[in-house]
Every structure is written in C-alpha cells, then in structure tokens.
Image (tube, rainbow, N blue to C red):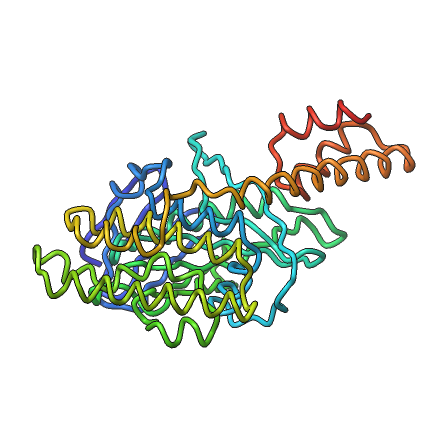
Length: 355
C-alpha cells in the first residue's frame, strides 16, 4: 500500500490493482484495471443537477418503454419481451450526509420483483462513479427492504453504467463486493458496462438499440475537437441523414411507432447541439434533417394525458383495495409511492382526493 486517504466515506487503501474501502460493514470496491484511479473530491463535489446528456437519458427512460426495454436487454443480457410495461420509481435519493441526488433511472418490469438502475456517464474513465452507484443502490434497496423470518432483507437492483465517451480509460467491467464484518463472507455485485462507441449504426438497428441514437454524435467527438473541417462536417451531416432515413423506414415497418421516432429525432438534436456547439454547419444541418425544437413535441402531451388518466385510475384502485381490507389512508399513500413512483406529496394529494 502506498497511499492512504480518509473522508466521510471511510478509510481508502490504494494499491496498483484495487481500491478497498474499509468500514465496519466491510465494503470493497474492486477495479479490474491496474491504472484505475479514484479522486475523493470528485465524489464529494459531484453535482446533483446533471448534464444535458442525463436529461436526454432520463427523458427516454421516462417516456418510452419501447426504447428502454431493448436497452435493458442489451445492458444486462435479459429477455424482457417487447411490449412489456415498465414501472418507474422515485429517482430522488437522500444520502448519509442528508444531501439529495437524482439518479438517472430506477425501474422494474411490471409484475416482477427485479429492479434496474443505470447511470449515464459522460466523464471518460471517472472511477468515482462506483462510489456514487453504491450510495444510490443502497438508498434504493433500503426503500424496498423487508423483514422476513431469517432477518432484514435488503434487495439491491441490477446496476449498470452507460458510458458516452471512451478514449481507452473506461473499464470493461466494474464490481462491488460487500464483505461481512468478520471477513468470512463476500457478496459480489457486478456492475454492467456499456459503451456507446462500441456500436455502429448497423448493430444499433439490428439489435433495435434506438436508445443509443441520440448519443451517436459521440462517435465523432474526437474529429470535432480538432476544429472546423468542412469534410468532417459534411460526413457527420451525411451520417445523420442516413439515421433519419433508417428511422423513417423502421417507423414505416411499424418496428417503432411514430411517437418513438419523433422522440428520438428531437433528442438527437439536443445532444448534437451540445456536443457540436462550435460547429454551426453541423448543428444547423442535423436540425434541418431531424426538424423542430428539442423536447417540445406534441406527442408527449398526448402520452402524458393518457398516463395521467391511467394514474388516476390506479390511485382509485389502491384506495378501494386498502378500504376493503381495513387499511388506512397512510397505507394507501405508502403503497402508491412504492408502486407508482410518485412523491409523498403527490400521493397524499391524490389519496385525499379519493379517500
């Protein structure tokens, strides 16, 4: 061991192959890379607001089961059927120091007791994300904790990271290991890693990973960083013209619906505007290809209205169920917060409306 750091997270012991966190509960975070580094300040100062890329990621997770299901299947090697419904949960978590963070996703397949948490990471090779993930996962798991005959059961979600950038620093695998106080038992938790730059257009469309399309511009980030180049700009515009045509063909074949096609196009604009902001020809060209203002699509208002009506019916059903079994309004509120992902205030308002 050659260096020792301490922070509110415990005692960190670092060598060239792994970073170990020693606390009474025994937390060890292992990196499968000898060059892995960790910066405590990066964790302590992590911004809870997020980036434009986080917003785009969350928009797709929130607005489209279709996009998210295929993404989860690829991330975790699952077999969730196309058309399956997803349940979203509250993505605000409160940490030990009482600070609030917004996770990028917190969801499950409807009717299943398996939960998913994926973070969108735009910082290349920032290994401190493992520590954030552990805090987020722990907060999520505690919300769902149950007490059984054998003891207190804390169920962790399946967790992954989508890396938007990779200059060779991103690790191919991440792992968290929870160690018992006596050191005799260890429970490994694999953190799936997925890199946008590993997928070309053919693989994206073959695997129906349309979730990755808004981030496809990251494949050109190095070229864009070299400065204005007409040939590169034209190549990028041509690429997004191809994406648009492939999206249109996919929508025509009804592989995706019109709402999803429109959503992808608008979000592509948003990310391109951020990544290629100094390249006016590119941002203008892609905007003309994809069309319109970002995130301001009428289809979303129609979808939200339908969801709002469905939510009202769901609340009514929970209220009636609690009443029939002699439950209280507090029971109904807790059930709605847990199953529908609403805040305490939202659930309180709706329950009081129908109780």
